Length: 308
Length: 298
Image 1: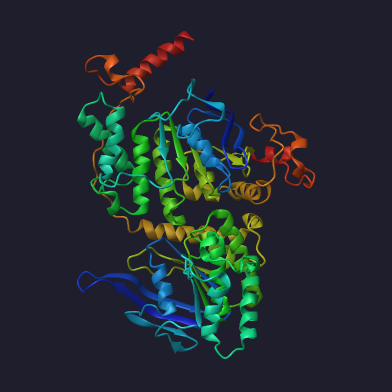
Image 2: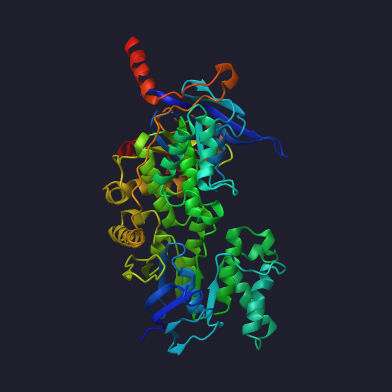
């Protein structure tokens, strides 16, 4: 019995008549403790998909169920990490996380709450920045707070919506390593949305490409049977890594290619001109000049070469 | 073939509150005519500083740049620049944005010919049906296509690309890399591209120059890309040496970029004074470029 299930889910936006379908007939079954990555173009409907699981949107048809119960709204059983961190700017790292803990576990003692918050701050290596406000933190550190907050809620499912897309390559790699480590420690069910196939393959147990919208559908589900811990450098000589990577990228590029309508054939002319040297004042050249044709230049070059 | 672009002992120093900060130090690079060179390194290592000096947008503190036999002074339309954000004028259409430069550089040509140039490049980058749209009506990827068309339309001596696809998602990036490659393969304009995307560098470049982390960034290592042209993504990714090269670059970025290189064997690197680099002592030589390792890839 799958833990999280999407059953023929479709959703669209816009008024009747001008309605555009974003997701069409999405079927997805995720087991407890599984790490699934969904990878697709921007605008494909990835965020719509995760909003459905989060309960922030309702499907037009089909059902989304968690643990056999239909999802009808947002709830603390699903922790979300957004791309834009979504932290409260006037609260410190500790207070941001404590706010979530306080809401969810009101009958815990103050000491227990504090311990719980501190444990999660330590988990993402932010103990030294505990009293800092988001404005004083780098993008990577803010995203760590966001991850710690989501995990402190002890959700049944962790939803990561392009958590690392706004970060530079190096910070992204560091955070990927941390997400990987944390996941191996607590084995939460994770749904990761990303536009980077490498990120998906590096982190997940299973990767599913989402075809490009409108009317996006999920592609083949590919099991990533590469042992953990994975090494970003060593993956490059892993046969499975190369196969999976090729399969995912090909699916995505083809799904986009199909949507391209052949444009009207146009006859194009490219005049054979040499750019003018703008450092030479125009006035000095005197009167209206003829543009220099490249073909004329070429003949000259040949002569020069002959002299050499 | 002779060197077309020459960067010799290029240095950039900014005055700082704690004395001058040396961002780039003695950076040496030679590019042949028609060559596509990628410059990779981490954010903040000084890659873009090198590029903006080459573009003439940033003063040179030391050393010199020679392009086609002339020392560079200031910016000019002989170098087409594609920035990370497309920098289009929002009140002009895609066509008008391209025409702005074309009108300057081809002022002797008649209007019809200038129009043909702008239309040609915009159509080739895939904007044939969006010629008269304003930037706000275009997606991020399409705006960047306008930026590429604008740079090519000036028939520059050199093309400078400063992480042109850095703001796009991985897959849109693939499409634009293809568009850039298709266009570039028509006339092989000498190009220097700054990027931190290993796959992008491998797909596009003839040679990849790896930069050490700043301050005092310099050339750490150089990789000659073994794939033949014209290139096609699928074939490149299935090339038997693709992942070998990829691993080599990732290894540099993850393990070696931080340490000051002792200079690769080629004349490209600058021999550094061992006494000036205390970090070398703690370094067991693992990160050194073994001549065998380099030969394997060259």
